[in-house]
Length: 400
Image (cartoon, rainbow, N blue to C red):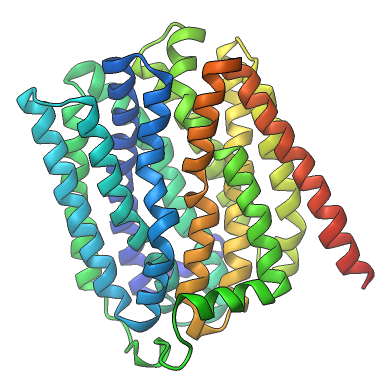
């Protein structure tokens, strides 16, 4: 079928299955950690701090990971990042099972996972081109990869809500640890062509990659837009436990429903993107997706009805993922192969690395002016930024 043409390639099939199952565990752990820290401390600030600790390493270490992936074996970098993440999940489960868990443990464990993730994501993105033998199938592979991520975002929190209500948070952490065994097996089972031709030998390290990104107008422009969406909109997820408890007077199942709706929106966005083929199509939808993310967040911010909040979160999830995947595809299909790891590390920084900065800012601001006002302002800034971006970059570029 046209929608899943990348499945023709064995390596991609293996990777899709392994990653999809592993990410369900990852998102279950994400939801369980958010719920556990808020239950233990009843502090919005600590909730934001935990989210910050889990993502700030991406901003700090992703450039190094990108440089490494341009010089070393992407398969083995990816494999070791998964092994270390698995050990972190099992350690977290052990702390909860033993009753020794403290709030600072969650911050430390979130930081460790963030470091492993900083090496895993750029390497995984840069490896994508080796998973398909026909470059024409690369956009479809990127969209399907994002589909796996967002399917897990839909399923994982729902699983977490059920497990927390039945047996406690520890089972979510244990499930995540076991799920890493699947992706480790599939990475070992893949038959990848030699990476010798894809490694950068003459093109330096981080500095050279940064020069390449900043002097290329298209790369610089799309990374700027993605940074704005990630900084302003993406941190909303860290404040969802506040809405689940205080606005809707619910438990972990309500939190799971809210997070799953964002995942459903992202899933629908992936289905749409899986049919796209040409860069011009991705360019047209990028700014519109940024607007959808901002408008959706503004609508969610003051909503007091669960059904309306679920609908607006679906719009937010769709807007964020369509923006990110469109930009990913444009970068992957245009960047020079010797710079791919470093450019994808900058993409990872813009998409995920800035989110913790936004989480910390929005967590602190929510304590001062309230959570609804904070999210409304963040959504409004994103809308204005997307409109300005379209006016300054795309309109002038078309006129030129």
